[in-house]
Image (cartoon, rainbow, N blue to C red; front, side):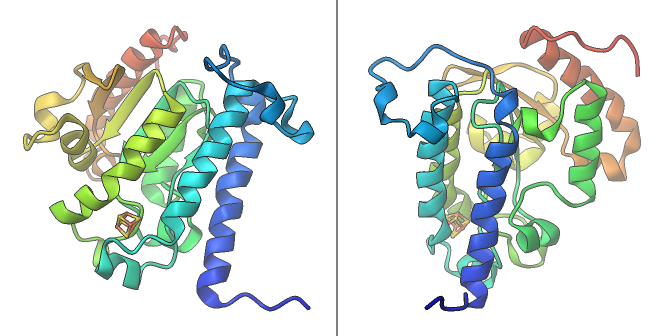
Amino acid sequence: MIHPLTGPQRANWRCVRSFTEGLRACTPNVRPRPPRKGYDPASVSSEESHLPARAAERREALKEVFEQAQGCVRCAELAGTRKTVVFGAGNADADLMFVGEAPGASEDERGLPFVGAAGKLLEKLLGEIGMARADVFIANVLKCRPPGNRDPQPAEIENCQEYLYRQVELIQPRVICTLGNTPTQTLLQTTQGISKFRGQWFDFRDTKLLPTYHPAYLLRNPAAKADVWKDLQKVMAVLGLQAPKKR
Ligand code: SF4
């Protein structure tokens, strides 16, 4: 007998589907990389044997971290008010990873990051440099929505950063783009604001990191899009991709 899912179970299932479907959808975009040392191809199911070994391994490891996060109650208030845990979505073998602050109402509802107005702008910016969501991985510092979209509290950031670090460790992007204050301050371990660091390169655990403005800021300050455009061109250059000559 099949038991109907309860509200939270249904939300979690939707979230699992979103994440796994997101990974599956972007499989054709996965760029083959050499298998990790010690990797055993026999551990991949026949269904996945067509995938680059590295991608299949990352996807499985990411799923495990995803499942751990689903039941996370480290932040009592957030765990009590969220509809879904917004783990992140995209290409498990992405060269480029974006890190934002926290889910908003739309993200909490759908279980996916950057799906509101700011997400649409991010997609548009990606499109302008010839990329799509399926080419990159998008995550937030916090995986649960702060009530009323309030700022994340330091204790919540500390509670959640293990998931983010694990995502970076498994995806091993060549470039991380932090969007706005919170992810920049979290990954660079600083209290300085985004304007001090925007457009400059930093190292985060052997990965190049470039802070830029959050798309939500661009919605309020459209003139700042020119700065983000310059930043994205720098990212393209590091990735060895040809940046469009003009907007
Ligand atoms: S924000 Fe992160 S650490 Fe806090 S309850 Fe959600 S998943 Fe857990």
